[in-house]
Each structure stands twice: as C-alpha cells, then as structure tokens.
Image (tube, rainbow, N blue to C red; front, side):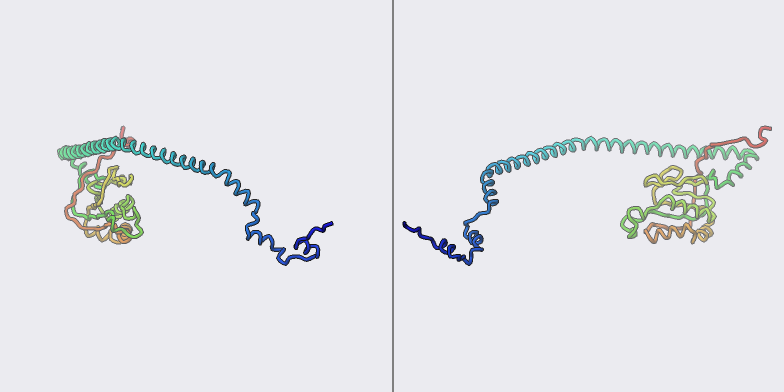
Length: 297
C-alpha cells in the first residue's frame, strides 16, 4: 500500500498550524486581481451586451433634438416674415389715425374761433342795444358789476403767476417720473388763493374763469372748462398789483407752490402787470328755472 503524500497545507492543517496572513487573503487576492465582485462583473456584462443599442439610442436622441431646433427655426422665420409684412399696414393705419386726429383738432379749433367771434359780435350788438335807452344803460351797469360772472371782457392792472413743470433733467432726487409736474389741484389752490387775495377777475392762459369753472385732469392734460391747456400756465389776476402781491405772499397757495419749487424744482414766479386783458367767459347754460313770486300778476 502506497501512502498518499500530503502537501504542505494539508500537513499544516493536520498539525493544527495556520498561516499568519490567512485573515488577509481576500485583500491579497483583490490586489492580485484574482477576485472580481459579482456586481461589477454583472454590470460589465450588461454594458458589453447593450453598448451598441445605447449608441444607437444616443444617435436617435441627437436627431430628435436637431429636428426640434429646425422646427423652431422655421417657426421663428415665419413669424419674422409675418411681422415684416404687417409693419407697413400698421404704419399706414397709424398715419391715417394721426391725420384724422389733426383734422378733427383743426375743425374744433376753427369752430372755437368762430364761436369767439360770434360771442364778440353778440356782445357789441347787445351793448349797442342797451345804450339806446335809460333802462338798457341801467341793465348794462348791473351786468358790468357782475364781474365775477365773467359776462363781460375785463382789463386793467394785475398780478401774473406763472407755474410750469420742472425740466426733465433738473428734478429733485425723489421726484420720480411725475413729481415735478403741475397738477390740477395745484392750479385750483393757486386760483383760490388769488380770489382770497382780492382778485376781481382771473384767467388761465387767456381763458376766463367763473365761479363754476371746472379745473380737472384728463390723462396728462389739465382741462379748464373742458378745454385742454399746456404749460407754462399763466394765471392772470386783475386788481391792484401791490395789494394782490402782498395779500397772496405767504398764503397757503404761495407756500404750497414754493415747497414744490424747492423740492421738485417746479418753475414758479410772480410779476406785476399794468395792462392785462381777459375775455368774457362762455355764456352759462340755463338748466333749471322757476317763475319769480308774483311774476304772473
């Protein structure tokens, strides 16, 4: 019987002996490249099997992106062509509207000038008719005494107050886009201050004011009796210039405008005049009437 020869390991195991680096055999095998983690092996196999398909999918995705970009470019080109085609039409329509505005404005101005001439002619005819009798002359004196109603033209010395928007490049730091502008309430305060100072007649840019005159804002325009005015705004007050100036200086209206001038650089100034003229205001329209007591007797 021939005994089988034992190897070194078997002899060591039979003798109960163990290698000192036995617990580090896995690390040794990893460093030696003998062991590959099963997960890595599976992933490598999967990658090798599907490598060609992924490349094809990448090519397909790249083709889709190019198609989308090409479609977007076509749409932008079509939109640009449409915009260029519509520009002449829009410009022509705008020019037509501007022409209509200018034409209507010219017609309105012409009608206003005709109305002013007719009013002046009517005033002269009325004055001539009233002068023909003592009763008419008394009625004319009563009518002239009603200067506040602005039924007759007025002339004489007075005080002229000028206000205007601040220059665009010379407004205060906190003025913003609208801080340096003149508003309707500024003119209202100014007119009320001049009435309180003793003015006998007042006009703004040549338009006569009455006790029922409206000063309002529509958009960026200031309306006086529903007629738009543009700056600078010259407010003419008839009366003794010195007395008007002394009474108006330091009033609430004067302090308001001076504060706007200092803060927002609005233009504001006063001057005396010896020959101001104000036209008659438009005739008041009768809205309500009732017979006087005993008028039917």
